[in-house]
Image (tube, helix red, strand yellow):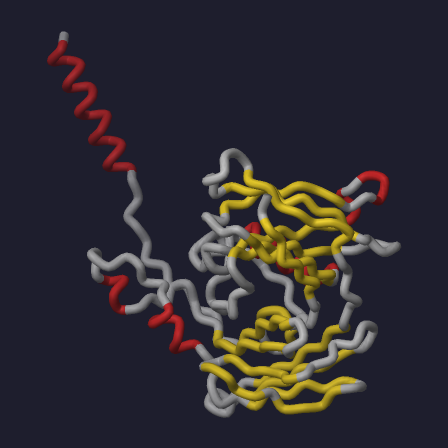
Length: 284
């Protein structure tokens, strides 16, 4: 009886294997590279613009082919996509200047006013590739916290804190980006979508709050710091949709492809000039 079961199992596996189709070699065309724009307003300092080139997820560094080296997506690999020596200009009713290169692929608009209600146009040209992009966006007014404070979640040495906040929400539909940093606001790693280990953020709309009271409690892991910097940024609906698309992709280069909204003509990324309101908060 056992022998019969073995024979049946053997022939079953044989037929399953025989019916398995041969794998097909499929060539997937890689997307053409484009310029990618990232921008960040620095309170009372100016506007930083990072300029990079896009690359295919199928483009892997040499060490990825070595099974002993799996951390392939690193700064050494990504640095080849930084766009240096580009001509980057920013124009508006009260501002007209060429941005200063301050690091590889990073450009600064000094003393940028970001006057609420005015529209500004960014242009960038890469002489090495001949690629050029342009983007326009409007400045929004700064929205401040009504109240904000932080408490440790459990005991004094807990790394978890809760941030309690309420917002002086103006009339109309508004979108916000709430950020928390331990120690200080970082200069930024423009390839790290989720920021550094001390950074947390959440995007939301005032439509999510009943009775027009925009307030809430968020929990974060921040280590042993005694203070945190909490920032609130009034953002546009388009930039809100861009952030939500990034969240759906889990902020990873290697996740399921997501179609990102963009306001950059002939390129990718998002040009924004939203200015944050920042508060230094002592943790109770």
